[in-house]
Length: 277
Image (cartoon, rainbow, N blue to C red; front, side):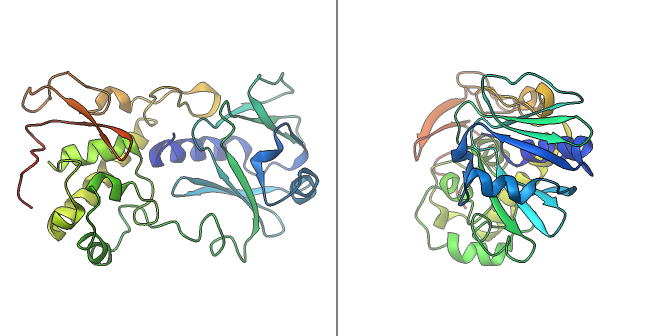
């Protein structure tokens, strides 16, 4: 699943290609992509509108249209975009095509078909689902408020930082990398994390994801940005996917465990189970 850095990369790429284009027509090949609206309602909502801005809120890509209209999109597990300067054949996983007034096209591909699009307006998009419960990203989270919640929670710290209603943008890759950088055992109870250490975790999450964004994200499994552009941060991962390889800090072999069903990588020496707060 694309995490915050990857979503930012895709957002930037989309903005460079389709900003200020007017939508002539839309072709929906998978109706369940459109939430809380019919295909006809979706078409009527966006046809003849111009794309005024594209930005992200956490893992959601927001497309600002003319006439105060908003599309809230989410790539979920396998969503990808392809941009074409002229009419092009559809891929077998193409689920949606935007046709623009200059004959260019934007295709949305999704092999798993988990992606979503919500139709909203400027007046309500922040206060209705799916954005109304999205938390701040690590660099904007209020540490004091978050600590009030973590200090009363017995869930694993990794599970907690993956909760998008508490901290947004962190997915499995960056949770592992963040906890390694912070020297925190992934299964450690959140209530046993000091406020100072919590702040360190948030800072490391921000710095690591910024670096990943600069390198185009992490291409693990199937992630790629617009038009098959792969990221490079996977070449700098310290623990994630590195099971049985030596830690770059202490040479201890990286282990893999499950945390709330998620494959989790850590260094048993750098991230000791019984390490103090």
